[in-house]
Image (cartoon, rainbow, N blue to C red; front, top):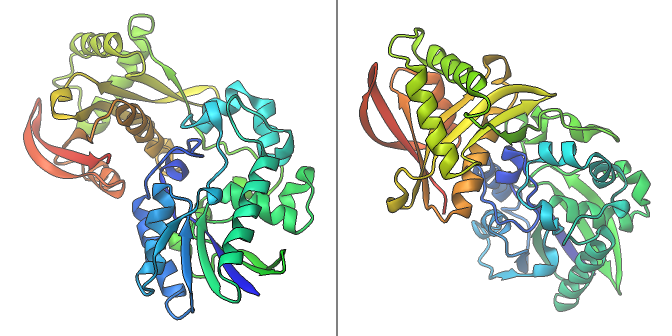
Length: 380
């Protein structure tokens, strides 16, 4: 009998930016790196003979937990990949829910009914990952193997192994990041000893501990924002009001605020790229804005965020990071290696927020009302 420890990757960009990352090659988050440390301790004294991952960056990084205490070769096995979501790749879940409500309902609650242009189907994913597990087990008869895979792929496999029908998928809950499923493979048969165990994670490190959407069938995550272009030519009042709120929030005064200058800058940015100025929408209400200057620092391979604002009442709901996700998505697709923004040195809350999501100090400059801290995030 072969033991297969099937591990979901650590928290990654798709999880925090709330974007559809199937084969999109997103990176691990700062919390994800701490989850990896906890996973390493879980497996520190567990005998393992081999280590596989899907080959995507987030599983290769997570596999570092096993390599910390086990001298094994890391082998890429594409059969362990997440479901390819085709045309949905890297789209915000909020946009997908708004545009394709029936398809999203199927994706969450009856996945065999789900389709998207260019995507795999769930039956295809089940066959693929099951074949990969059986093949790996055949290479390691009587041994113990760790395999780092993905949430929906693992859920699809476990539901089949437990005889759960597609329309009853809620009986197999989503697994937390770095959760572990233990399979026993014997003579072509696969048994499940346990699944989705995250006992190595304290509540502070659990991705799911601050979310509730995954707990029940028919649940829609109301924390998923939708992004739409904000044309400053067509909606000057909306843009100006959002920038005014930003200025007042940062400085506590409107001294130095010039709406005409801000509006003209936004028009230039929108003309360069219509996705450079977007409004964040929650439950039909505009609650924030992201503005990017795609021409600034382009020659240095760096993307610039000119404005990132979300209403104060929404800041403790893990929403603001989704605005950063829009910037990461756009600039990475443009081939930029890094992302920069400026923050007033006295704005400790903003500095702490950006630091939590891997921005680091990269210099200082002068602003209209005082010194600015330049912060940078690596996109590679």
